[in-house]
Length: 61
Image (tube, rainbow, N blue to C red; front, side, top):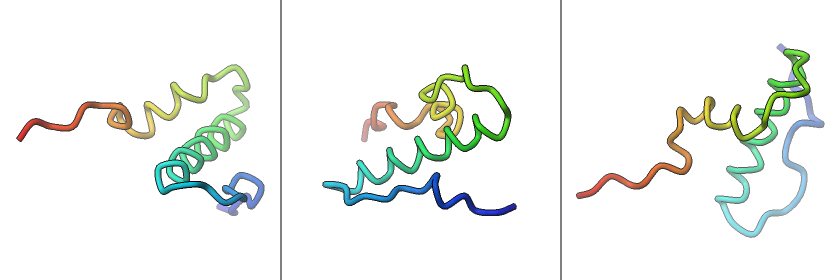
């Protein structure tokens, strides 16, 4: 499998969360493009990639 350099984050971000979200968006878009499904919702794909844990509340201690 070849790495698509155009799908990688390319600009400076203000914090690590922004880098993480940009990387997830790149992964979701790359997956969508490889499967020829342009109508696939990026956030739905990110939910699948993160197993719904991206915006899940932190566990109570």
